[in-house]
Structures are given as structure tokens and as C-alpha cells.
Image 1 (cartoon, rainbow, N blue to C red):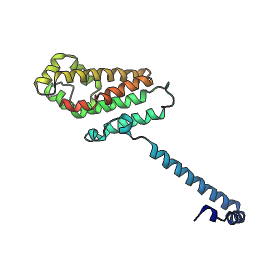
Image 2 (image 1 turned 180 degrees about the vertical axis):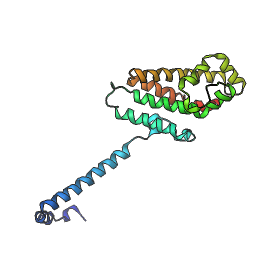
Image 3 (image 1 turned 120 degrees about the horizontal axis):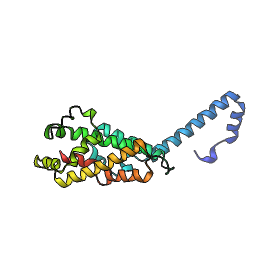
Image 4 (image 1 turned 90 degrees about the vertical axis):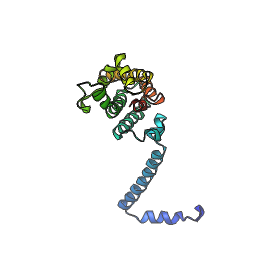
Length: 203
């Protein structure tokens, strides 16, 4: 049917014959339809988490689900405040720190418990980022891990540096203020420099 074929006078007469209640119901239906169309368009335009971080979904297919959930929560919070760059982005850093911690618990807990034989490592859920960082401050610990076949010294030193920066940012997020630039630095460490995925290469 062509636009010129529409009988607008008939539509007008039909509208005139309707009660106010029927008109309101029709208007509400039309408004709901318009809102749904708008929401669908906005949903299609939303950037998924992997695109947001500039990472390959395939590289993260074996990462624990809880880590992915925390990465997504961090990205959602950043997007929520993206138009206000002077906001406190501590919440995003907290979720990214949780993602790091759960990666450490999943991949490194048994190393600290069975290889380094650290008595504190009896329950993974009771460990903190600092618990995984502190032993690495001793170069002899790193050498022992390398001697046992767990990665190379340079990789552990890079990993230690990453944990130091995450731990510092975590403390600031808990007790101070995280600006937009600091959040971008943390994301760069974890995703551009593969700090998060490199945890899997040290097992």
C-alpha cells in the first residue's frame, strides 16, 4: 500500500467516534510501541564487554565466569559515569581488583599452598590480593617458582609489578578517590598489557 492510499479522513472519523478512554488506550499503545523501538535501537548500539575492553572473546573463553561477571560490572559502572569524567571511579576499580583476585585464587592458590607451602593458604576464599603479592617481594620466592617450572623470572617480576599497582589502586578505591585517568591506567595494565591473562601463563 502506498502512503497516498491511506484514507486519513476515515482515520479521523474513527478517532472522533472513540471514547476518551479508548483514545487514551490507543495513545498508550502507540507510546509503548515507540518506547520499545527506541529501547531496541539503544540495545543494538550498546558495546559489548569484549569490545569495550578491546579484547578477544576467544582468549577469555576459559576464564572463570565470576571473573567475567566482575569485568562486566566494572565496564557497566564506567559507562554509567562516562559523561562525568570528574566522578569517583572507585567502584569500577574495586570490581577489576576482584576479577584479579578471583583469577589468582583460581590459578595460583595451589601453587602458593603446595609449592611455596605458605600456611595461610588453607582456604582460597580467605585470601587477598596482598597475600598473593607479599611472597613475590622476595626474589628468592620467584627463583623457587622458576626452578619448579612455573614460568620465567621476567614473567613473575612483571606479574609482581601488576599486583603492586592493583593493590595500590585497590587501597585508594577503598579509602580515597579514583579518577578517570587512573581507571584507564588499570585497564591498560590488565587488558592492553594482558596482566589478567598472564596469570594463566604462570601455572
